[in-house]
Image (cartoon, rainbow, N blue to C red; front, side, top):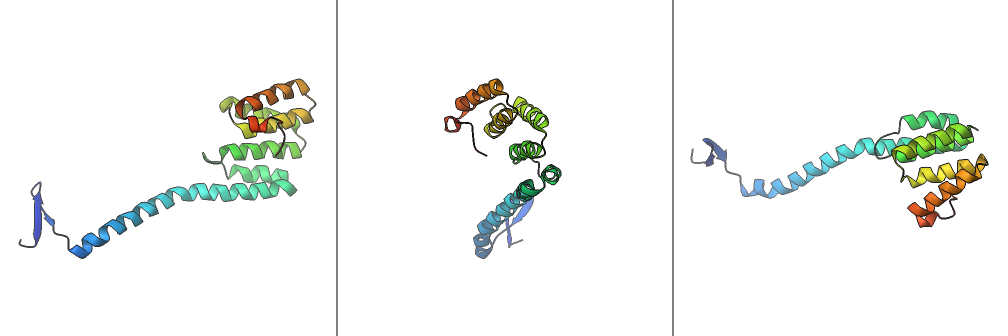
Length: 151
């Protein structure tokens, strides 16, 4: 029992050698980094899937809609929904695009990206009164989008 360390709650604790104590801190850091990396893997996978859907949007908007379903998570949700609105526009479903944009904005009224998409859809549908209201909302939320245009 001479090698045993202090007794804690009746259990003899081992004494760590200086080398073990020296390695304990870096090992703890590595463990924390591994845990963080494991937590980020799903998010990175969704980002990659979203990038793939974005690439498909140019040539195959229907396939982009399907691919976007695999990319949705908490971190990519807003971008996925904006992609879906754009895909519906490219497929010629302006009513569906506006309906989807409005549904997204009911859940998150401060989603500037979706609000910009809604503005663009309203202009395409020649709904100038609604577009003017959306443009005012864009200006209120973020003055840098004052003209309401862009991608």
